[in-house]
Length: 204
Image (cartoon, rainbow, N blue to C red):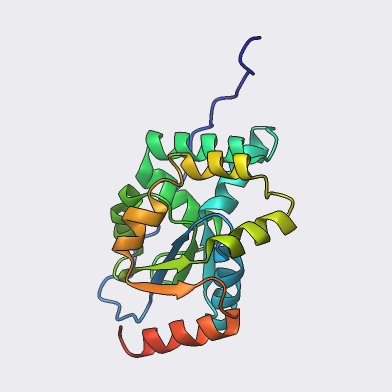
């Protein structure tokens, strides 16, 4: 049986806005990382709403590209296309993720779905003068499996394959160690929001 045909990922066209020279800003950039099913999307959506800032998402942007390509929006295609975008030009990829959310330079942003250490430096360069802070969402494994099962994605073999993909491999080890803050994905969202807001107010 032959391999299924795939479509080439289209080039990214993006113009980076220039921050205002000499502008004093209190902008922040919070990048969330964590395993599939840890609760990143729910938390980042609620946090961005609470803070009144943009929410950018690696997953949302990759879904956008997958849909443009006319591919099925399954995890295999999402991981493959995301990896191709990263390997082709990580700076353009990170910039496109932010731009897709409507973010412009000098604004605060909550970024969902950080998965690769090598994207940290490009993101920091784009969001400056804000300092990029990394927040790791940890979760009990059984709770995670229960959540994914409820969403119809609980097959252990499929999940194990997804977790072992290069797009997930750094999350629990390298990125967890790089985190500036750790929150519990099984804690109430409201409690995590208050915890993060207090952390920001204290200047970390």
